[in-house]
Length: 367
Picture 1 (cartoon, rainbow, N blue to C red):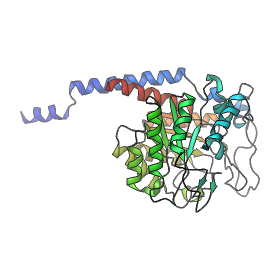
Picture 2: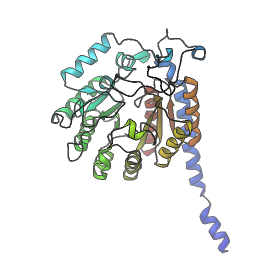
Picture 3: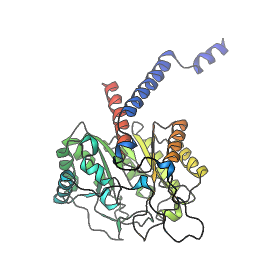
Picture 4: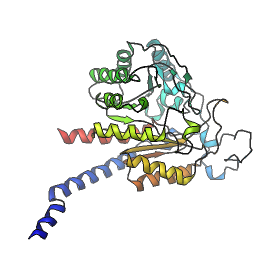
């Protein structure tokens, strides 16, 4: 009798099994949508060589090499032009808004701002100005110990601009502001609230700093009404002290991601890894496992590209085939979604397509 009671307690109930099966089926349907939607090839200009396997150039620097590696063909992008690109740039300037697209010299800026093949212009807004209090060795954003004060109109101006674009998914990020008591978390959260006031249906992803690991600041963001909480691990643990500012710790990043999920379990959490800095395969896989253990749902992997001669040199240009392998590892580890490719960045439209589908299905189920 006791044995039967214990067995019945431990075995999943019928409705629980049905719920898990329904969720799994829905996830498969979303992944199928994604396969039919944009992929890496959608962000590669038509005239770019596709015979990557035939490239004979040097892809990895050896010990003692002082010369920079030549850019392989799969990473060459067109100079941004076009009326949509210019119009978006003018609008951002008129509202005194910054974008990480420009400040971080993203190689996809021409594709995203001009609208690409789908005709929808997208940009990742960078809040709290264009000057960071940290100096990571991979990032070209300006740095200062005492950046200008926050613009009190920025939350409203950002919301207005996004409303005028008419997009369904927006990514907000920011510089680090260690000079502010809360790291700027209240300002960030107010921007999310203003966006939701202007556009109730829009999905908001926040790619946030670590706020020095402060739980209250993380909670401020996690409870702001956002849909996706993103914070980048950037690189493997061994390279973190050489790649990131000394105030940005590998374990601190994992804690921030885990804390956000603990505070708001409904959030989708996301992180990103740069490849080509000298990491090993074992270290990359361990980083992905650490992110999964911290409750991260989605992960992106992309190629590190040296923004200026002052920054870290590229140790290796990772091939598209290798990136495909990392996508398969992400699937095996159980991430909801893994975006992996040479030109993939934290804000990657194919990934946003998947996350948007998942979130809208969740909302439909809750009605």
